[in-house]
Length: 195
Image (cartoon, rainbow, N blue to C red; front, side):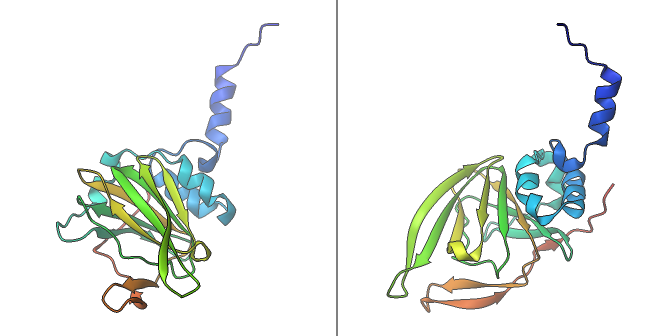
């Protein structure tokens, strides 16, 4: 039996798909999908986005001293931050203020180390993993604490999605050997307007 497909009907079906049901290619696709979908589909949405680094260049800012946190959008449902890393930049060990966090590598390579407290309340590394372009990591406070480091010989760019905005978190102070509360801030704030 020969099956024939009507190209017009196929095109119409694809146009009626919601952004999360097809591969997302632009920042607008991502923001639309996150705004319209239920929280339970966020994991699928962030994994299906395939952003060209050139499309987000206007949100980047760089510092040789430390990675930069560049807010693309922050609303009551989610927060999207672009983090720009020079070689060797590393976060302190931290939690996420009770929020879910997805990290999508846009360019470069990062190493994530997960920590937990042992029976003596000491922080110990329990595992590490490496992520390259288009790979996603997930973290929530019950899983422990983590740190991220750019291990690429060049710059790296990561897109961080928080299911609710993070206003403060706990970071491990190496000098004091304990966690301290930190108010979150941005290096840049975009005036994001959906096209």
